[in-house]
Length: 361
Image 1 (tube, rainbow, N blue to C red):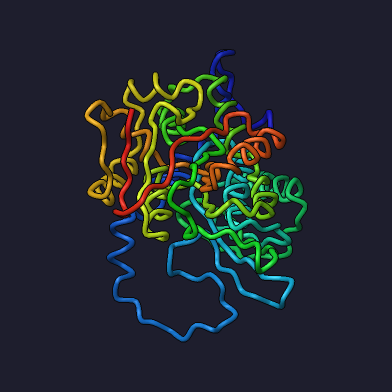
Image 2 (image 1 turned 45 degrees about the vertical axis):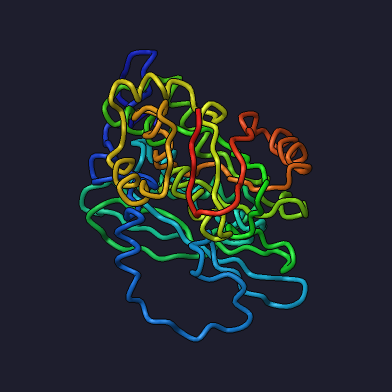
């Protein structure tokens, strides 16, 4: 891609001559409609007949739909797409594909096939750039062991890329976001801070080391989800994306009719996140997230506004969030470490009553 890269200082990430992020009003999972607005949009949706084979639908805002095919197989179906979060076209394709595939892993499944969703401003982006986006997506699908078997393309105002992903899981091993139990330990598979690093990148404030940490994190496939489905002590599973850690934990708590307690000091963070947040590199989506669900969160008096921004920071291709029996926690951590997720950590626990999240320091 040397023909697309401008000369930069050694400690800065290379900048493509065509900046993909300049075409989009938001990037990555920060593009998501805020939870409160989405609830308003969907509140008047009409009900429809649900076949008995549909094991997971829209009722708990889970990561994917699950349809029982037979006694041994259930089909997982999901889709995800967004505008560029980075300027490098190959990296953008990789990130979008990893993010979409994650929803299958978050249900405890194994992906089997993908379809590409492509919208590009054909009159503004060279075909070579578009081709590199698609190649990036293909590389992640190859890593996941699945083909891109088709898709759909449109000429759009902003660059959009993502996937429809299908997967399989045994019907008895589906891991929903609604099965948590009081006393469960909460384990997060990846560190937080993706939105903050991406905001810094857009402002030219992220160095080459920070960019590498960002890309390594959000292109890492959440493959531990497949093995987590085999652990009976794993009671609930989801992944942390555009609504931030608090938003997705609230979905988990509401689905189980429980509350959650988070230890702020136990939450892993990406390198440079604190410094960059202190410098004002916080996304607008973080504030929108808090406005949507902050009334259901209890913050200790010592929690700062900066820490609150970390908890609501939109994560693109974020980590798996596991709710498991205390006796299973070490097995879960060992599974993550075995698959290269060294930052996985116990960050809190599920508690009785409330449908709220309490954050302590």
